[in-house]
Length: 497
Image (cartoon, rainbow, N blue to C red; front, side, top):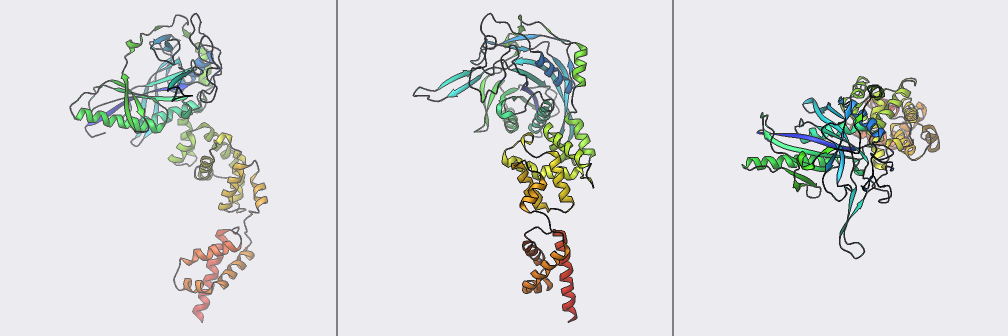
């Protein structure tokens, strides 16, 4: 990006819907990355002649739910169309999609940027079926390289969400994609697992002179399945097009792929126009008609979405960063809310900010290292609050609390069970700590002398020696206070001699 040029970006997002059966047949939806190939197919989804599709009502329900969450106008009647193109993993030779009369139009998402909030308009939300999957293999069993087709994914319900070209940078594209992914997972219509390809991004990128309203030739980057690839490919394409225009050349309209290893876009084919697909209404499917009462029921069932939850978390005293982190995934937000509710009932109450700090600074790191999702871990909101209550009452130290949390991840034990088993109770007894302080000062006279002569850095060293004497279980605040008092008394004694 330069001062003389501005990026103009629109995103198309394809999200698989969490239905049990496919879009137009009763075949089971399975994980296409792990299931044996071509087991979950039938004459309908494998494109056999003479078969008749039937629309999946659950997919329409989930699509309408997303449309309402995105502030769209849901059409009373939408029509499926045939999108004609040849590709090896498209068994019918066409894809059943929606074009002229989609499920919903005219929505928006609000994103947070470095310059503040921005509203990104959504042009359309429509239903379609996914394609199969090509598997490329090199020199199998002595034969040459080959490409195989797995049709387990063919016919899986897809929701396509198309934005207007309102995005102005690669970072805004990522912010939009993350917000959309968050909404889809909150609604439980998509798992959000990009590694398995259940949500894929396609970026339409062009650049124009700053302050110009003209839309220039655009390129489309296909099949991006990570935020990193979305950011890097979009930024690369912006820079590439600026270089072309600065040199006085013309940007060619193309469909591009992203080479992750070389971090460059590569041309795949010339960009298709709508007429290239020869859209026409699907003759084997009636229009989708949505009853207003049914639509109202769907709207009433919408959960609290990330934007509203973010405002509520801020009102609890959380800063912007922590609130954003906690609302990104519904499972994380619900865990936090469960802990806050439990914490409000303890005496004294555990503050929301304290719970947030332990989640973001400790638990999330442990989950990442253990490769465990929060919904799969053994720790419950109640157990986390019980642990923090023990810490707050000085029954255990902060270091012991971290040790207990790690044990809780590995076992189903309660905090108190772990503390008892490993004897982690914190020593708060003043008499015991006083004796340990006096013993350490007596055993290290030279260090005490240096400290009293002005070498203040030895204070922490002596504190560590006291903690070691008590096996790290002493309350560090009490240790520091008693050490300070004892050293002051020693200094006063020396001054009177």
